[in-house]
Amino acid sequence: MSLAEKATKIAGELEYSPEQVREGVKEFLRLMDDGLQNDERDMTMIPTYVTNVPNGTEKGVYLAVDLGGTNFRVCSVVLNGDTTFTLTQSKVAIPKALMVSDSHSLFSFLAKQVADFVNEHHSDHFSEDPEHHLHLGFTFSFPVDQKAINKGYLIRWTKGFDIPDAIGKDVCALLQKEIDALGLPVKVAALVNDTVGTLMARSYTSPGKAGTLLGAIFGTGTNGAYVEKLDRVTKMTSASAKDVGEYDTSTGEMVVNTEWGSFDNALNVLPDSPYDRALDQNSVNPGIQMFEKRVSGMFLGEILRNAILSMKEDAGLFATSAIAEDSILNTPWSIDTSLLSYIEADSTKDFSVTKEQLQKDLGISASTISNDEAQAVKTLVHAIGKRSARLSAVPIAAIVIATGKLSPPDQPLIDGLNLKDLSLVEQGIEILKSVITGISLAAPSVNAPPPSIQDEPIDIGVDGSVVEFYPGFEKYVREALRDVPEFGERGEKRIRMGVAKDGSGVGAALIALAAKMQYS
Ligand code: ADP
Image 1 (tube, rainbow, N blue to C red):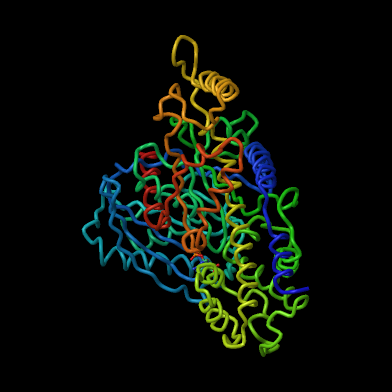
Image 2: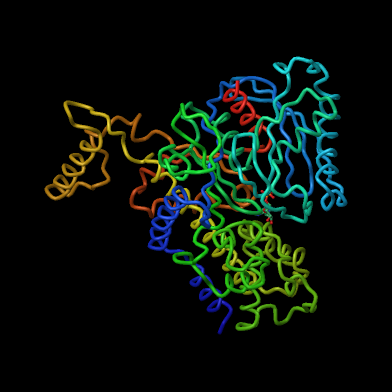
């Protein structure tokens, strides 16, 4: 098989058709409902106890800390109340020995970093009066069983941490205890998931006062949190719900952390190519996080590696290049997803960027790579990146549909006729017009409902290197949204997507503020 034929074949295997997008959205809607009603589902739909999103007018000074994988970040955020903020931060690497120690050793180290930071930047806050204590949002990126906005019990450690005595404990209380031992004027006010931070940060900074619907991360992993109606979160609100902490019901809403990385682990609707199967079998958690394994940065490089190996075997790719046994190409999980972004961005006629990048990242001498080979790799990259983006449209579309953002509200407009009825009447008129005069269905109607309602933007905050840097990612997400009948072009245009930087800083600060409001 020629290189071009093989590349086209692989690209075909990675195609994610409009029909598949539609099936994906249907299945996502089904699993969302299931997760909102029942505990212990793959897509967990975790209630976060955050019941309000900011509108940009919030004010005050808050602390935020972030225990992710390798670093511990402490920052203070001044919210200016006009959608702007200033952020001061410090960052330390977590000593490896503390990752496998006991909870006192780890949390006293964290408290010490908070103390150093407060002493340096907020010595003016030292006051006996708890009213004047600094409120802190704690971004903790490990699985917890959240029972209140400021209470979450550690389920298990991941990412190389192993501190057995912390399991089953409330991590906010562990941090508060060590902070109190140092006599700091700091209250651990909120436990924060990074997707919720993204949602809050975007809602504070985004233009307009409607509030952000969804915060979505496409980085190392992928996940999203959105604003749901409380009465749909029946596993929390129904009479039979058990083990639910206190929360504020006044807004009638709750932010839900979907954990959509594990959407369709059963592979009912997700595409499954030989390159996906090889990746999954080689992974530490086969059969788990199946959506994430097709979408996020941790995996796209490995899908590319598997596809390149197949092309090498079947079509003699890089046959004239010297590739060592222990090269990157032969080492699982070693291709960084940034390689895909560089290759996708290459618009040179002689593929010079692609060749240089293959030399730099894979150690294949650029001068030995033919134009046909570079073109073939570029075809694979494009197919993998585009599929990731089109898949990313599935949760976005499903959440927008589930929350009713596309349908006009059921408010009477004129004498018992509401906007939904009007839009049906309008469609009927358009069909008649097209039959009679051949006028296009898409032609704007003079009777269209007021643009302020049906064209209102639906705001989405995104974060992560894949959505930020992969060329055309948003464009392909939008193309796939247009493939969903409920959206079409008009619905797609209403989606306003913007990068929300610093979810674990400003987002955590905003959640600390929300918590302060709830408990004061
Ligand atoms: P995190 O999700 O860990 O907070 P990032 O959002 O930076 O951090 O995501 C890191 C992931 O993004 C890694 O898997 C990396 O391979 C991938 N990545 C880094 N740079 C790029 C890029 N330029 N284009 C696409 N993916 C990238």
